[in-house]
Image 1 (cartoon, helix red, strand yellow):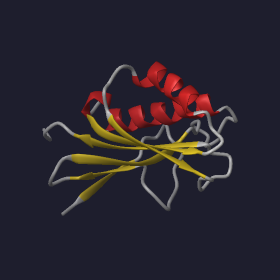
Image 2 (cartoon, helix red, strand yellow):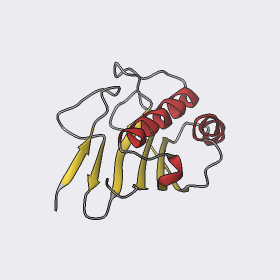
Image 3 (cartoon, one colour):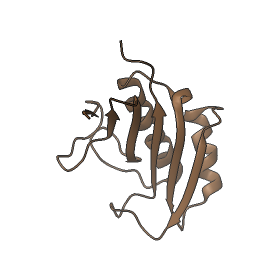
Image 4 (cartoon, rainbow, N blue to C red):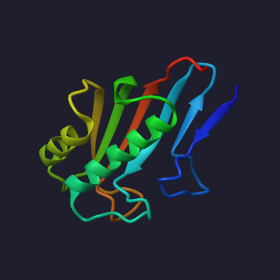
Length: 130
């Protein structure tokens, strides 16, 4: 079955991965883990700002695919074990709003990018293709 790759121009590109993929048969959007990166690929040191940026990156991918955070069925949030999770949750409400998305939160010793403290992935149900 075909898979469509979603890579908004506002996010840094990487030949090793897509930011998200759409499994056309099920119209389900799988968004790969988003760090709190800016459009040039840099990551601020503040974990709350990283959380805000990671969620904004998710929103950009959702918009590119024709969806909103209301279409997200599941978020997986991965944080480095030194991060204050409550600060991340407070920052996430600023960007994500009061959308009751199912979540899994994992604490890890480190992420692939040493300066990344937060990574968030999502699974969304897309509207029917037009």
